[in-house]
Structure formats: structure tokens, C-alpha cells
Image 1: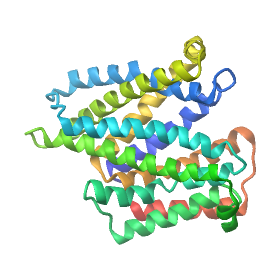
Image 2 (image 1 turned 45 degrees about the vertical axis):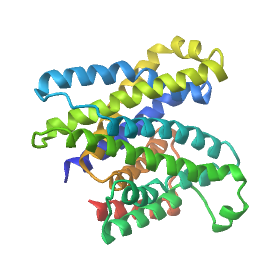
Image 3 (image 1 turned 90 degrees about the vertical axis):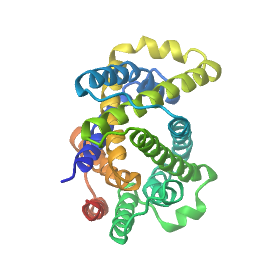
Image 4 (image 1 turned 30 degrees about the vertical axis):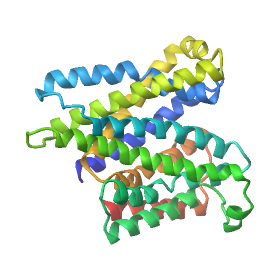
Length: 301
């Protein structure tokens, strides 16, 4: 199995774990406050990871040119928009549909990757993305076609979330490719890992600053509440850093659409977690959805 696939699966597992830990913070924090934890408390771990990696890899630091900054800033901002759009999508009466529509990110990433980076995907990969998307819809709940018509307007924020998630993935890959192209050395895994770490560090720094300003202006008191929960938040930050490092390295190595499609395996981890921790039963629909999701991912790898 390719390294990028292993990194993507690890990132999906860690992201599910981060979400599980983050849920414990929503009792005292707002939705945006709890979301901010993943940026603020990941920040020191991200820069520590970059510093240690720079010391042990013996690879020269890449040149952060204008192309890199355009990509990484666009990725950071669109990821924040995606987070807000997803919150808006699931806040209505169509939680499952809003979530499922946000998962169209892999399909949208395939199109946007072709337009922005000139990276296409083959017929087999497109078929795998399509099959896994059907599995996602089945796993997201009892969604019927008429729900797409009758749903309130907020649910279409799910599509916006998917678009922005696709865009940020494409931008992060573009930023990593810009750094790799700026070096004269032959690309190695150590160099790819360092480039991904630089992209991650800059992105998280920008997101911490932008979202911190937003909370200060729009939700007074939330920044203080966030700092008061620093003990559990540190674990969230560390896991968030590890998950993001896996995602960013995978996207530096391979097509972003393929990475996001394989990353949908996170839904399986979420389902397993709910069954294991909450003793929920799995329906036939969910079993069929799991089978389609796995089949689609196997076609991709």
C-alpha cells in the first residue's frame, strides 16, 4: 500500500479521535470556540514539529515565494469558511443531508484540481470517487431524493462547505508543490515531509490569528473560556497537529482529490466509535453504505 494511502488513513483516524475529544469541550464553549481549540492549541505543537524535523532531516529550508503564500493563504481562509458553512448546514433540521453534501468535496476536488493545478484523475479513480460518495450518502442517514428539494436553504451550506474543503485541499497541495519546485534537490520523503510541515505551520498560524480576531469581535468572552480549558484542549491540539501532518504530507505526495476521497474512511471510524462507545446498532443501509465506501476506496488505491 502506498505511503500516501497509509498517511491518509492515519489522518482520518486521528481526525475522528480529535472530533471525539473536541466534543467534550462543547459543554463550556460555543461551536466556534470549540473549533478554535484545534488551531490555537495545535499551533505550538506544529512549530515544535517543524523545528525538530528541520534539525533531524538535514534538508535545507524551502524558499517561501509569492506562489506559496497565495496558495497557503487561500487554503487557510477557505478552510475557515468551510468550517463555518458546515456549522450552518447542520444547524437546521437536515443534519444528515448537510453533512452528506459537504462530503461532495472529493468530487469537487477532482474538478478544481484539474482547473487550478492541471491534475486530472483517471476513469477508475472517478468511478471509485462516485461509488464511495454513494456510500457516504447511505452512511449519513435516511436521505431521500426529495429531501434535496424540500430541504431549507441552510442545508446548501453543505455544498459550500464541500467546495471550500475541496479548494483548501487543492491550495495546500499547490503550496507544497510550489515549495518542492523551488528546490534544486531531488525530491525525497524527508523533503516532502518538511515542505508539508512548513505549509501546515503557516496555515495554522494564519487560521489562529484570523479566527482569534473573529472570536474577540463577535463572541466576547470565548477566548477567555478557551484558555480556561487548556488542559483537555492541549490533547485536542496535539491530536489535531498529528492528523493535519498526515493529511498535508499525503496531499504533498499525491492528487488532493484522491486523498480526500480515501479520507472518507473517517466515516467508518466514526460509525465504529458510535457503536463501540454508544452501543448503537448498525442498520442494513449502513452496512451497504460501508461496503460501497470501502469498494470505492479500494478502487482508488
